Length: 242
Image (cartoon, rainbow, N blue to C red; front, side):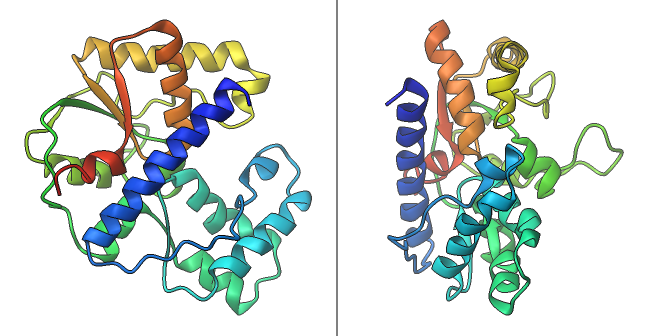
């Protein structure tokens, strides 16, 4: 197993476990289908959408009976909501697409919660993943003149002891971009290093992200450069001392 694969597996395990515990503490009945696989996003991102249909259809089969589908990864939910149009739009497909939610969006919009009684006494920097921000509209973008809002910031600002640090570039891409980080490695790494330096310059102790892919990219660069930063999925922070 490569270092990236190992890191991604560890990140997914920790964030999935934190998501499960968090939702159960919020009195949500959670079921984890054991036969689920990838939603098909990697193939779609690489230009092989037609080859991803099997994975997309299996995702629908696994989740069609549930009221909501919640994932701690904005890019996965974006793919389900925006790219499952490659499937025949049966009632089951439409239901899954409509009922798929990114974790922070589910907590704030469906459960109507922001204050989760969490405690995390650290200086935190929020990295906003592009799929969640610009695709799912979980916050306003600096390139638009919309009134400022951020679903993730609303949740973090309610965490006791947490100091949300202001960054110089609040919504800049980290450079991961799926296969972009493979085919344009040098640019991807430089973008990631810029994001990390912005957090260091802003006196951040912990970078938090709501997307596995951004988390893996940033943590990999931080570990290789031995930077004095910790990276945590937002579910891990929201689940602290709840």
